[in-house]
Amino acid sequence: MANEPKRPGEMPPLSQPQIQLPPAPPLGGAPSGEFPVDRSHLNTVYANFCQVIGLPEELLLDFGLNSSGDQVPTAPVKLTHQVVINYYTAKRLLNALAFAVNRHESFFGVLEVDIQKRIRSAGMGEPGRPR
Image (cartoon, rainbow, N blue to C red; front, side, top):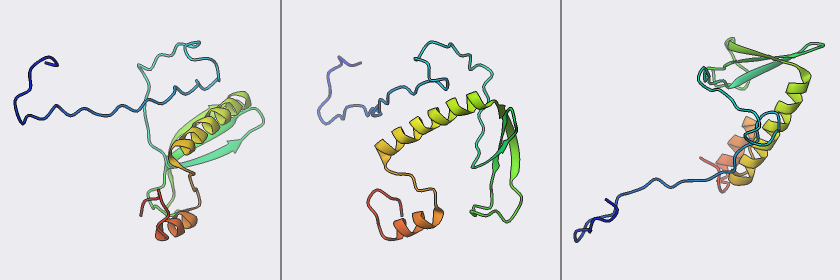
């Protein structure tokens, strides 16, 4: 196919551009490939709300969906998943998330978590911000 001659006026096939990002380090911070993982039973969920509860020996991370779209929900947030981790794992998670967010911001710009500031920035037509 790649060696077939093109007919006059024929456009070459479109291809999707490939963006290569460096691989993220695993959660434990170990070099890639040091810990093999089995993703065959992995479930994916979406959450836009997280609540952290600290206990003496572990952290409870409750995830759910705030369907009201408000910063302060008017209806109860429906929690759907809970992850229990110890503080060592929490610190590794903290470092891995900080690395991932910093890498994202270096490519796409600073993430503003205050909704009021995001609305003001979008209204002023700040470059790189959606309106």
